[in-house]
Amino acid sequence: MTLSSISSTLSRRPGIRLGLLLAAPLTWLVLVYVVALAALLVTAFWTIDSFTNELERTFTLDNVREITGEALYRTVTLRTIGVALLVTLIDCAIALPVGFYMAKIASRRSRHLLVIAFLMPLWASYLVKALAWRSLLSNGGLLDWAGGLVGLGTPGFGFTAIVLTQAYIWLPYVVLPVYAAYERVPDSLLDAAGDLGARPALTFRTVVLPLVVPGLVAGSIFSFSLTMGDYITVNIVGGANQMLGNLVFINSGSNLPLAAAIALIPIVVIMIYLALVRRTGALENL
Image (cartoon, rainbow, N blue to C red; front, side, top):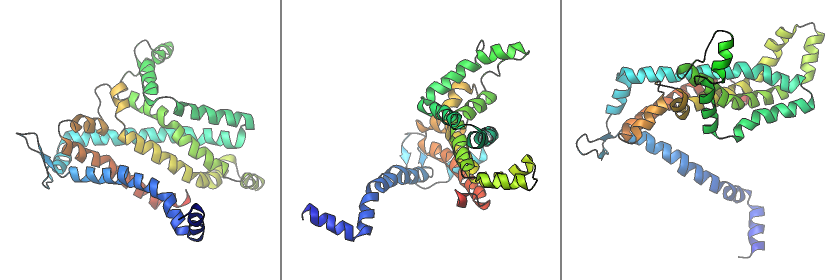
């Protein structure tokens, strides 16, 4: 078969053309993500022989009972969800006014500079950003010096440090979708609301905010899910605090089924979060 005949066949069969185009990325997605996730789900229901430390491939709910029955896992789960919610709320609170300024108030030049400013942290290494916050939060660091001017000090390493660092790291993932959502709000709607006598706060609440919610939801999914699965930041600035990612990492070397069972917790939490978001109807407007 010559190249011309292959080209002629593909031009007459759009389905074959689409299949060939999507075959490689879909194969990669299935092998790397779906199969790995399925293997994780299966491993969670296996166990480790306590004498030989060998993996026993027999179905058991022991790991599920352990993570649902022990106080340690409940405490760490609640802490992880609390951190993820706080990080998401902080990022959304910053993204709403910043995105509005970028889309509707800033000049064209300032808008481009602000977009670059929020993109630049994404070009830096994750570890560099986390270590930079460790330097800021340490005794004698910048926050310690600035807080000392008003009688305060650095919050040190712990829960507050985790929230601050995660909120900074994931902020671009929230600001950029919110900014894109503001860009899609027609200026004519704001002018019409102003001409009809609506105050700025009423215009924002009843006209702008409903149109920005899909972007806000998209950003919150990023910040919430990325925080739920993170463990590196916790190791660097978290002090003695642990999150679910740390428990997965610690147990992955000695008890893989238990680590897989713990990894199911953030998956279930994120699925519940997506279900709640879906009920608001925001996902249909993304």
